Structures are given as structure tokens and as C-alpha cells.
Image 1 (tube, rainbow, N blue to C red):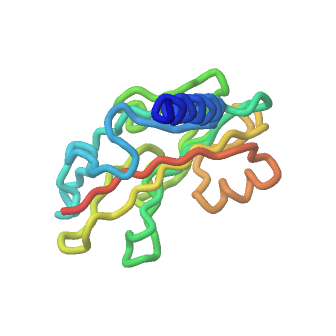
Image 2: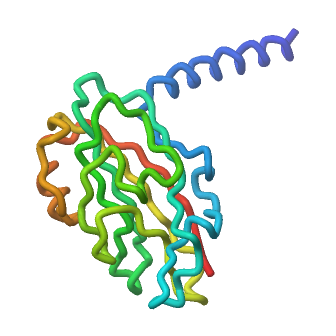
Length: 183
């Protein structure tokens, strides 16, 4: 009897947490689990940089349960350990329409469905990880920000810092995901 009551209590509590999780603004990827290692194909590819050993494919990402007032999204990928702790920005994407619920593989590299901001390497699209050998597995933090700005409100080419300044007082919620990569 006690066992069945514990089981029923556990089922009830799980159901309550699952119902709450269903309502959370979430960012996920079918290509990697949160805090898991990224496949080498997602690493950068640049002949002039021997640390860029991948194919520069961008993984797919999906999101759900955005706040009701969302008019657009911004997506930033940042490596806080990059540049010896100064950080490297791998993607600055914004003006993503509220009707979107994700990006397919390579859409972040191809520039489809968003306005590109300037990342650390100077491009307007996804630029994969290029950590130097021996620096360990870096953390690539994906942050999706729901905003109340129209999907055409911001000009092309904003840096991460400029975008964050423009989003001040316009951010509604954020969801995050971490992928790790090392040589």
C-alpha cells in the first residue's frame, strides 16, 4: 500500500513538473543535447586558421512556448572561453519572425530567416567553433531572446554588444542551450 502511494505521489509530482515544463520557453537541437559535445562537422572551416578543422555546418535548432507578446527573436552564439577568456561570438542573428519555431541544418550558415549581425570573425552568418588544441572543451552558449520588436526593426550588421543595447527594454524572455567542442 505504501509503495503504491509513493508511486502515485511520484506520478502526480512528475505530471505537475511536466505540465510546467510544457509552458517553459525552450531552445533545443535535434543535432546535440544540452551540454553535450558538438560533432566536428559543426566546427569552423577556414584555410587561414589551422584551428578551424570542421565543415562549418550549422546545427538545427527549435524552440517552443514563446511569450504571447513575442514579435521577433534574436539568437546569439557565444564562446565565453574563446580568445583566452575574452569571448568569441559565433552568431548574431535577429529580426527572426515570431512565426518561426526553428532553423533547419545549415540555415544559420546560409543566412535564411534572419538579419545577420557581425560576429567576431566578421561574417553575418554562423561561424563554427575553432578552439585551439589543448584549450579544452569550450562551451558554446546559444541564447534565444524573445522580443517585442517587429521583425524588420533592426539594421543589418549589429555586433553582439550593439544588439543587446537595442534589445534593452524589449526582451520578453530568453532560452538557452549549450554545446561543447574541443580539439
